[in-house]
Length: 444
Image (tube, rainbow, N blue to C red; front, side, top):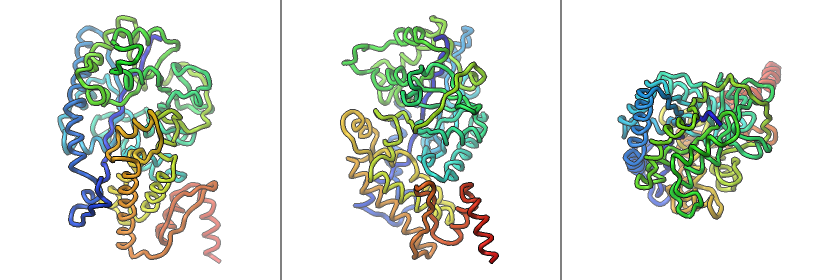
């Protein structure tokens, strides 16, 4: 394989307060009542020291040194809107480093959902579309790039999400290279969804996870992983172009600096160049020769099953999701801080902490969780979103039960009054035919 695409996911959530059920507060701002600002700041500042500044400085230096030597070093980044919000508060120097990367023209910034949310899995895609629009504008504002490549939250993707991304005008979309998607084919080629123009770039999860999960594992039979060894693996792999996509916190946070992970990041571009492997960007491969493929299942990059069940796979996650959906239309009606805070509740991490399982997947979920256990997370998160919803209903003087829309036998939008009902009808294409009959009925 003579070309490789390498990129990084950077996301920080606004974490729901760990003591919300046990220690409710009433005199703080709306955000601070429900979300743990102090913990969010502490975590951001720690990762800023361990990863964001040293890793980004390493990449910036690699790009500049390569230019002096007549080489190209290229990377892509997918930054969530909530990460950039936190960087504005507690790490503007981090934003400045990424803006320097943008200035080199050797870095591509992807689009995703602003709040890194699970809304792409909802039947009604209205909120998902709004979050994608918000994120696209954010990237244009900060980095003067119009994103052409899309990555849905945690690579949670199905055929409908790919089609929606194409409607936005994205040229490429990143998917997990699962066996269920590829059906025996290699991820190291360019694919297009059958009957569509959008290119599908499949993540080579084996090569990606060698860095992300196994780099500092002394029990791994390939330990230690050097830049030279990894460049050999890439150059010897079959295919036209591969894609490596990992959590940016791999560099200095998940694997500490004393493991040699930052040196690995520094030397990898040089070792790739020594083997004739070219580093390219997602936007540069859209017009390459491609194979057609059909996507029939929902996939993600999480856990063993690599589907949506890491976020919507048990009764606690379903209950939390239902409560979040119930709060959507009141949040829109109240607007301002209520809408913004509600969108923090849609962030995928809140669902991820509710995962029930065992073995390796449970260990990974526990590592990232800010709660002591999934049960602890559910008690606080579910009570928080219900408290938030009840406060909204009280402000709107709503005392009735909601109207629940059903699409293909599944719950879709939820409206609490006539105004919200009509808004749902007007925004969802699935209900346009129903609207025509409703207008005829009203005229009678």
